[in-house]
Length: 279
Image 1 (cartoon, rainbow, N blue to C red):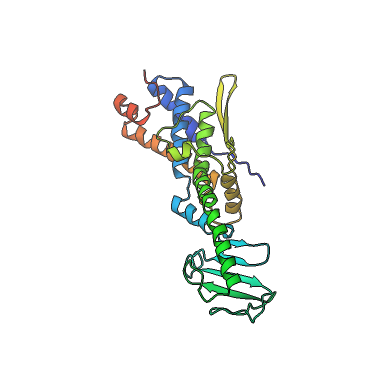
Image 2 (tube, helix red, strand yellow):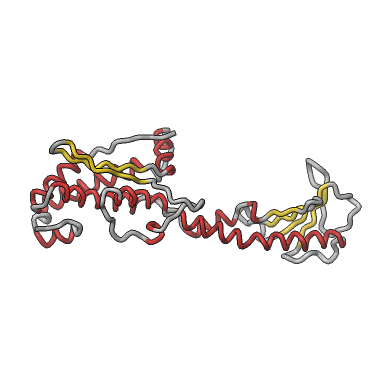
């Protein structure tokens, strides 16, 4: 489901008008500078998954820890995400006779009958039957062959972790606003499928003497979180709240600067609005 929202910008527009009057620049220049500060705040306050958490999530995916042969045996390895000993391996052989010899075996409960062979460490148990030993070695080789693909999947997931933040950057750039101090993992973020999506867009709208900057963020996680919030569920990725908070904070900061006389000082104004062309 798509969600559309409008952010309250009444105080924001007034702040841009006042900044333009005091600085002697055009309203559009002042508007863009205030917008830049808002978008930088939105980018900064958009949550991002920690790299270590991403690595663990990909590492825990079962497809990297279970392999099978066409004749039935299945080798599984404990991922460690649900307890137990990470790396512990076991072999399950469906429909294998309970007469098969093996020191560590037990009947499977429910489903098809079969045998479990628990392997100490990463080495086959010497007491395992010859055919079981052979199956274990073959499947361990297949499991090892998956590791380069797993590392590739981790790399792609890490590459995509800055996409939510990047959507604010995209929206800003689309209307000619360059954000400052953007982390490299945000600027270079790429979806795991290798496609560069335009999640953030914007346009300049001129209607007579009126000027508007329209920005749109379509990043899925930021939108779906809005739906969760409307249902009373906490959602840190709520795009509406992130942007509305950024606008409100910018207006509050500007009003505080005005009351303290900071904004009227040329030097201080240049420090606080470095993107503004001051005359």
